[in-house]
Length: 334
Ligand SMILES: [Zn+2]
Image (cartoon, rainbow, N blue to C red):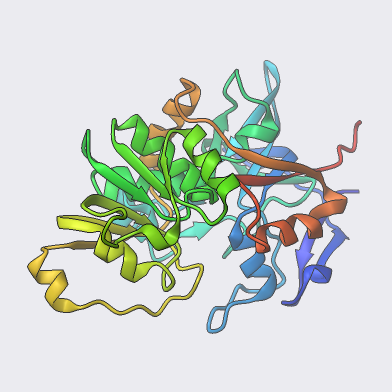
């Protein structure tokens, strides 16, 4: 019997409930995906806990990053799924800005996700599994890769040789942003809280910094682009670290969403403050080519069986992971 993990009410890990569900059937232009792996994102913990003032439309099946197997005339094929899409008919979608669509969908947030034994998706949402990656690795990529690519390539319009700071470099978005900035030939700096994680950042190719060293005399300053996802706790330092004419691009506010800025600094230094959320189909297409060619790689912290889903959420919430936590689903035919 097909199953799904359902969040019927907000709360602790105990609200992640496994239920039997109806079998899926693919219609025209659709494929049925037998799900093998789902990567966790902070979004999963927010859907579970609830966010004040935001309606997730419970009950909701979580899971934005999905890998699985589809049947094709040539036999079974492993795929990874697009995490988001627009209505494809509005002016924003037609201009290629799916993430500005009023009907924008993010799998596992405002439409049911992939933490289930099977699901049906439009065939175009299937990305090919790169030959050199396992499904448990590739599944770690789509959402954070898309987010980071849109931030740096599309919003900040990164230029070769620029000086980039990635705040929270060890996060899912952070490890992608570092790789993208290196790909652009940038000088990459990144922050992390512990010496162990800073060493991992160095191995990735970034110059590691403690948070307290950013934007201060003798620390890291004169940065062209800051990649922000921490928000309240790092905002002031991020602004101080920017050089004149610098750009700050932000996709999240994990520490809190209310920040101040000195407007004289904003206009004297001629700063650009750029908001960014998710990304477009063309962003993911461009980024996936780099994955296929092996120039961007997934960073997987742990692969856990479905029975340890609650432990996976706890790992994310403890902020002790480097890269992604992946959940492996039981296979009915195995
Ligand atoms: Zn649209």
